[in-house]
Length: 78
Image (cartoon, rainbow, N blue to C red):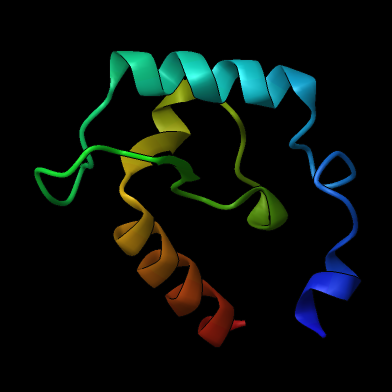
């Protein structure tokens, strides 16, 4: 299964520091970048696994639907 191969969230770079950054980012950017819904997720435009970073220029607030769609497209691409 895909999730079994990924490692823990901390191993992937999503530990305590990320959780704090995510929380602050959503407070500053509460609306989904793709629709008028409330954002629930902070997305890495360039995923960490592909060399992206936690830098603010690489982040966007998305609602759950749009985050799932983007993540699905990225997984299908490999």
